[in-house]
Picture 1 (cartoon, one colour):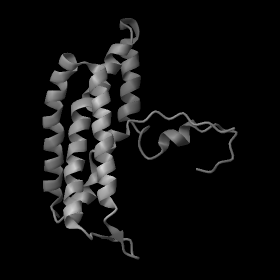
Picture 2 (cartoon, one colour):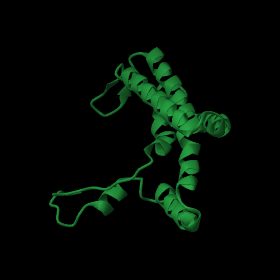
Picture 3 (tube, one colour):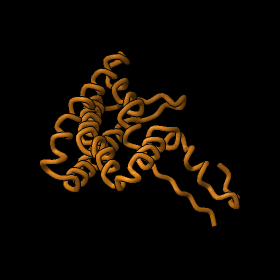
Picture 4 (cartoon, helix red, strand yellow):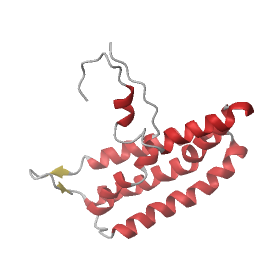
Amino acid sequence: MPHVTVVDVVPQDDTDARFRRYFKNSGIQNAFAIQMIMSAINVLSTIPGLWAIDKIGRRPLLFWGAVGMAVSQLIVACTGLTNSQAPDGAIIVNNLSAQKAGIAFVCIYIFFFASTWGPLAWVVTGEIFPLKHRARGLSMTTATNVGPFPRGGVAARLCWSRDTDIPL
């Protein structure tokens, strides 16, 4: 029986390159402008998140951040249904207003992530380890979060049991 153990922080990757295509399909072709808009939202949203950690609490922030990200992703998926794909793989935008609404909700998704799950992941990992093991625990947490493990299915390839016949 194959088993997979994968710990992944996917939203951090989602706030960058994956959503650039939504901007390009709406008429914004300048990659620098796209990156500056997304980075500004990401950085400016982190500041109230850091303030709210102690004022509101960890659990409500995680809950409402997850709700906000889920609703934003659902709306982005629904607006993406208005597009179609050409035989050569190019995306055909049938409803420009829906595409722009999708972009707005991508930015709202980035806001929810950057103000809740982004900083809280680092705060919680700093608090769960006892003082005696905190340095080692945080180094392992940082290595698995920033390193190659959450990207590109490397974790799945490393964690498959050797007795499986499922090809990767």
